[in-house]
Image 1 (cartoon, rainbow, N blue to C red):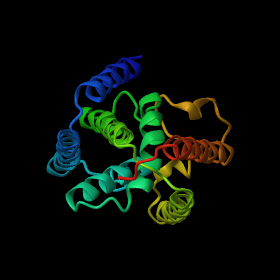
Image 2 (image 1 turned 30 degrees about the vertical axis):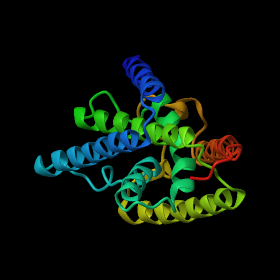
Image 3 (image 1 turned 60 degrees about the horizontal axis):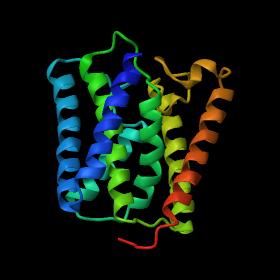
Image 4 (image 1 turned 135 degrees about the vertical axis):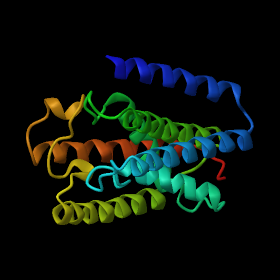
Length: 213
């Protein structure tokens, strides 16, 4: 229940930001600050306290890869990867708000990282929506192909290092959709189907905008 209380509160903050802040530069500066705060505080805390675990704390889940991609794109002033980031970000942010892969005994910094990461993805999506960002069919197909490459790479990483990024080996812990899904590999196939559906919905939403930024 606490998970949904927090996500409702964060959703309200996003609503306020979307309706009250109209300056693009201000929005990007806010996002840049939140991205840097989240990534630095999370990793510095884990490393300095000696609890960093490469099997669970590497930014290899798609949402965290997307967050790093957004940060790099803003810092280097490039929009080349924006379509891929946006296609990942909107669905990933909503998924993170509706689900959690953390148990109740997870560290506080892990919970903060989870919520702030998905908040950042949704904030990025809202910024591009306000800017009438456009996703072409070519962008859509290339992003799917790139995610397929990442997915296969993560599978090999998981096999090599006995990890579970992208939940390719087993269901994620915590309160999430997979608790009502069948066991491996069927839950994974369903999650892939949900991801593709999310991609398509995001593509249709942003292919209707007319101004390319």
